[in-house]
Image 1 (spheres, rainbow, N blue to C red):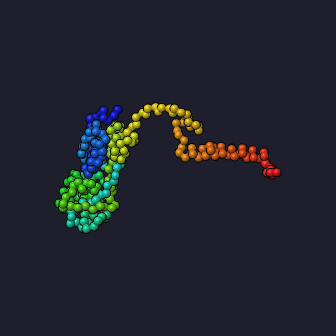
Image 2 (tube, rainbow, N blue to C red):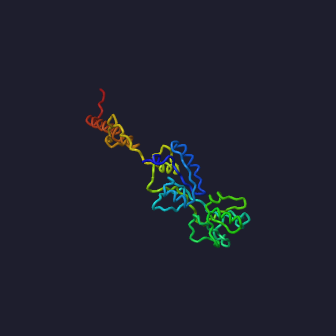
Image 3 (cartoon, rainbow, N blue to C red):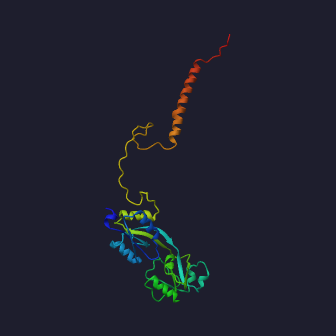
Length: 269
C-alpha cells in the first residue's frame, strides 16, 4: 500500500519557527504527481494531527512520544534571550543564564525547552503562548528564552536577542506515526536526509528482476558465485600462476635440458 493511494496529497505539519521551504521545493521537483500540503500547528496541535491521521508527517520539536511516533532529529537550535534593546545584556555578544539572575524570566505554556531550573525570577503567571510572552517583554515585564528561530519569527524593532551559552537547546525533528510509514513518508525522509533522486534508500526497494546469466563461463573458480574477482587480485594472480608460472616452468625445463648437456665446451679443431 503506497502513500499516494491513501491520500491525494502529502500533508506536512510544521511548528512555528521551522522553515520547510527548502524541502518543499525539492519535493515539488521530484514528486510532481503528488502535491504537498503544509499545515502550520502549535507543538501540541502537531502531535495531535499526526496521531489522528490529519498529517502524514511533521516537522516538530523534540521530545515526542516515541511509543507511537517515529522521529529523525534534523538539527539543534541555539537558545537566545529576548530582551528590550536598552537592556544591559544587549551590550555583549553572548550571555550565561546567571546574567539574568535579577530579571523576571517568562515561561510560556508552549515552551519547548527542557529546563531543570529556570533562570532568573519567576513571573506571577505563565503566558499562554510564546507570542504573548514577546508582548510582555516589549512592555518591560520580563525577558524570554526561546530557540533562535522563534526570536526571529516574532522580531520587533524595540527588541533584540543574545545567545545563552549554557541554556538547554531545542532539537527539530521529522516525525510521523510509527504504524503509518508509507512510501511517501519514506520519500520525504530521503529528502530531509539529502539523498539524491536516484538513491534507493529512503523508501522500500522494489523486487529486482532476475539478471540474465553470463553467456560465457568465467575461469578462475568464480562461476556460480555471482561475483567478479576483486580488483587487483586477477592481475597478481595471473602474475603468479599465469605468465610468471609458465616462465618458471619453462625456465626449469630449460635448466634441466641444459643440465643434461652440461660439460666443457667443445673446442674447434
